[in-house]
Image (cartoon, rainbow, N blue to C red; front, top):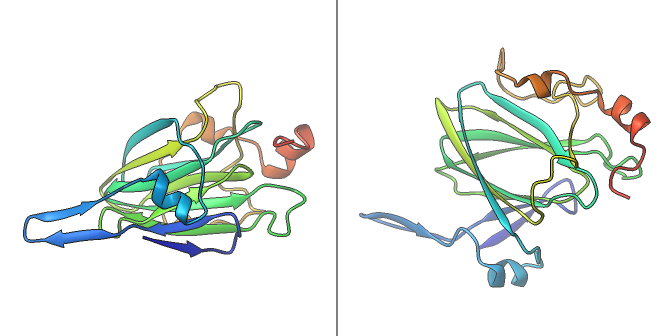
Length: 184
């Protein structure tokens, strides 16, 4: 298993060890012990699973205090997973990272508190599974506009399919004016 650094010191891509032969493959998709050895010591308590069709765009989502750390992987198809630093005092504020996650590359991404998350579906269908370290709480669920011009994200899809919630999300600057410190 390898931990790959990104432009964000807190965000990591995980390349699991995958054992392939004529029967197929085997991998440990998560091991607290192995992740801890890499310095990743979050305790995940809930698993989520989403299926989406091509050109679907989900995001940009995050949770306010206490927040949610996510461990994301794509188990069917391919997505562009996008992470945006939304911490105003951060040196990487408003920077974004796009990583292709797929059933073929087996990669995972760790997304800590303070980052917005979303993804676009690049294959006919995609299934995304992710672990979180805090239970879902609708009172802490927040979002910013997926196509905020101040972020200039290349989602790599044309005419995305977007939920009403995501279509009505505020621009990041408007959100932060109303919620100056959502992560305390």
